[in-house]
Structures are given as structure tokens and as C-alpha cells.
Image (tube, rainbow, N blue to C red; front, side, top):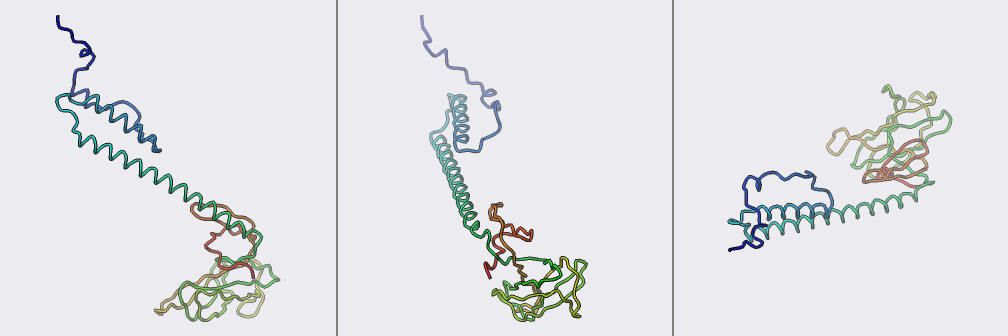
Length: 230
């Protein structure tokens, strides 16, 4: 009598079953280990359900292993880059926290006049401007005062507004917009940057940058600080 030994334990190849979607989670995971585990489960299922008469080609098998190795390398690189970026951001926050308590001049679009003290402000431009003028306006667009500042570049020039209008009369206390306008090298209108002084009272990481909280209520990016101290 012929015995089958362990041959009876080998399942019969069924193309329908082999090609049917396998139950389980659709998520591949996010970590390198998750991706590796998911890949290995798929590979084992593929080997278990392959056609014994037409098994997986060795070259194809090696190619899939190489793809897995490449995925792991890419994921490991991403994790390393993320870690490096976080370290840089943390270091940047610590560096900028040294500005707390310091007087700075930061980019601003408005100023607040208390009705008594003159307001020091700075102006500059990332591109060369000629015939530059600082215009201080009410929020409805009415020009209160104009200050000619001539040529502008990235060097900061400082001025003081004493709260007087163009006609020499004293303006009302409150918030006014401030803008720098001039002519670029091509003769077309261009804009500069107005800087208002304040004291840094706090710093926080925000996205990929660092935001600084100023004593006048502004929250500005550290790249908007153009001068520290007087």
C-alpha cells in the first residue's frame, strides 16, 4: 500500500483563491517596521498561493526584495531628516529666545501714536528705490503725513514722526497705517519696508520658523527683525 506521507498536507492550487483579495487592513503603516511587516506578509501570502507548476521567478523574487530594501532606506532617510529638522528648529528657538527683553525694530504696516511722544521708525528696501516717501494714513486711506526719505537700499534709515500732519496740526491719538513707496531702477513704482521698534517679550516655534511676541502686541517672524538694540 502506497502512503502519501506529508503530501496530504499540501493544499491544492486554486487560481480563484490565489488571486482573490486578501482580507486585512488597507493601511501600509507609516514606520519602516510597519512597511517591512506588511511587505513580508504579502510576500509570504504570494509564496503560499503561487502556482506550483509555475512558481515565482528567482529574478522577480530578488527584485521584490530589492524594492523592499529601497523602501526601508527611503523611510529611514525620511525619519533621519525629520529628526534633524526638529533639532534645527529647537536650536533656532533657543537662539531667538536670547532676544527676549531686547529692543528690536521689526517690519510693520501700522503704528500707534499716544498723542504725546514721537515715534521712531526705520525704513529700508530689498531693492534700490529712488524718490522714496513714507506715507502715514488713517485706516480709511486719508494721508496724514508724508516724509521724504530719498534713495533707499537694504540699509536701515531711522526717522521720528512727531504726530503732526502735513499742515502742521496735531493728529489724534490712535493707530495709523505706514507704507514706504518709491521708484525702482526700471522707473516703476516699488515698495519698501517700514520698521517699528518694540521689546521682545516671548518666542515660540511656529511651523518651520520662530515667531517673536512684541510689547506692542505684534507677533512677527524672526526674519522680520532687521535691527536689534538702538
